[in-house]
Length: 460
Ligand code: ARG
Image (cartoon, rainbow, N blue to C red; front, side, top):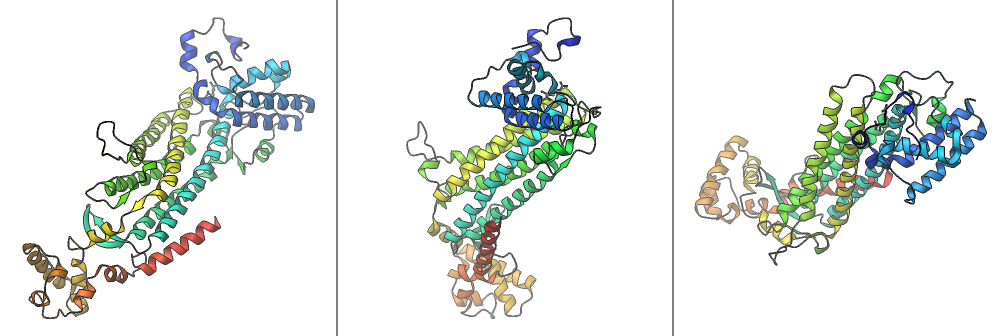
């Protein structure tokens, strides 16, 4: 490999330790394909405006394409001596096409080049994550449809509260992941800005045409300010914030799957293919996947904090600190993609123990609110009805019975307005299906929500 591309003003050789310390090639090599695509667009534009010859651009493009193949096929030598992926590619191009390569960097700096590379990488990553979210939402809707009328206890404070449909509970996650997908989609507007032309920070004296580069690379717009173009990492922070929220949702879901898999709950059973055993306790089947998803959420939040902290004190414009943006970004892209992928596979394979779920709705006074509602339907004001029901619950507790297990006479002791129709009123399905308020858990509502979701999923 040849001499450093910035060696001109230096008289001493770089210390070996410095090379290793400043090098980013171990991780930014991942940007090679976008770097090459960006360079090809750049040299074509330079030829278009007459800064270089058409024939020179052809040689550059051919050389760059060849390098792309070399890296892809593992036939490329990486070394700490060349700092980063940009230096590696340019240096190899010099080996391949000689001095013509030296014209490639005309009107460009690594500062705007790296900004371009990350934007191109990230928009592809976001598109990928969006397709994964779309699949996860489809899986949730299919699961909801398949378990449409399964009832389960709904919880507040992790205490049984009121019966809900399991499908309604799942559709709550559908809503969260829909918001996540919308957020990623929206962020593309801000990622999709072409920064090349900013050069080091001030723009360039060459007659360049950033709109042409933008068109070649499919960017709808170009950066409006060269200083901002090389300094801005908002779009990474925004991505990490969106990724963090997505991981919050994944992690809450994971926590529920873990709880539901315990023998105490026994609401679901994850498939053998998506669980692991214990090396010491032969009976164990552990929910390692949701546990790891829950754990990995913390690493994504860490990446968000890392980037916020990285950027908060930086004077304009480019600072080398910003090289540290990549490990955090790559890490989070990998984590979010992997977590979504594994859930898309794991969820359809889980077994839903609907008898256990239903049984759990019949103990714990989940129909107390409904007894109060019953009294309201007979003309008693809600506050009073609440107090009467409270006394009924206390009495039932003492007898170790549920409300619906009390005799009609016993119930009438709390209010003479109670009649035998109360038992039907307190049944799980009738409780669920009365909750017809918009977004409530009634079967009719959930059916509609699923239908709407299916339509939306088909459209996008
Ligand atoms: N490897 C650097 C980064 O990731 C590329 C830009 C370097 N620019 C510079 N002036 N040293 O930020």
